[in-house]
Image: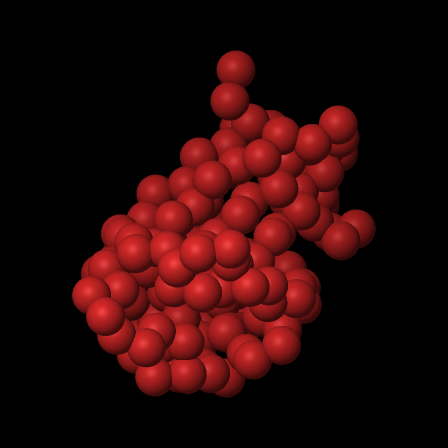
Length: 136
């Protein structure tokens, strides 16, 4: 059975400079287009020693040049990041921004199974990040 699912809109690069231009550095981003990205965990997981109960969350990010802040927030069914409320954050972690081997045309997310959970990989343009989830 799946451990999690992610629902997100997939904006396209279309020759544009994405990070630092279309998606500004240092600002909360919905991590997609249209509605904010929704993460559903089917079993409890941990992210950097914080327990996340099974259920649905909104996944925001704050892109940076060298690192990104990944935010798991308890608000759901939100449009964009306009109604983002920091007090609803369940966990925030900092992960390194990594260079892709080749440009990624459409924002893409994939789960990579690990021995003790999974890693959510998020990539677009020339950048990707890895968000580790561990079994509780």
